[in-house]
Image (cartoon, rainbow, N blue to C red):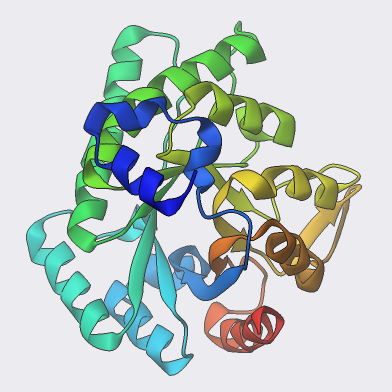
Length: 289
């Protein structure tokens, strides 16, 4: 699909949802374009204790010369305009893109009422992302309920995601389903779900530290063509051992696939984030360059 055709389809409202799933990655192929970012989750301890604010994260992004922020919403003081709009203004005036928010969700719901509740919760976050100017939301698939099969749970996830994608598409926002254990523990299953939804507004939020197979890089490679956001961790688990993540290898995969987007550092190790993150961001930027 060329750019002119894509723009025509994207402006066609409901017709956009009939576009094949690979259109969700319409910029795949060709020259790669990588941007640095920080996940707010890296500073979860400081945000939870209120020793750091989301406004402080914007200032940190400026200090570290980072392009964007992936705002984990768990510690938002509010979703009212009084919080969201000044934060958006600060980010704009600081030259920092609030390109993504990361939310909790559990889409493995077979009950129609529970599915509706999850859908409505996602609608609320889609509205909040729109006010922040974020073009992406990271969502979780959840865990397979007791008594259900994985195939059943995957259908439920696809059902809710399909409804959410229709609403998100009207706001111009992409939903990235993360490989986060549970129903999305394996690349094959998460790709199956994304293909089932078959929407240009749904892809994979690729967390490079969340595959715990003997060959996690093989799992990462499978997901790269569907990635709409990438979160990188300092460590990766391979065959039960926690080892340093090979960022150069991961970036090589992304460049080969023509990935265009953010690589957001999600720091989870023991050294306090204020001490560790600046050095890791420096390393990430060098690998990207």
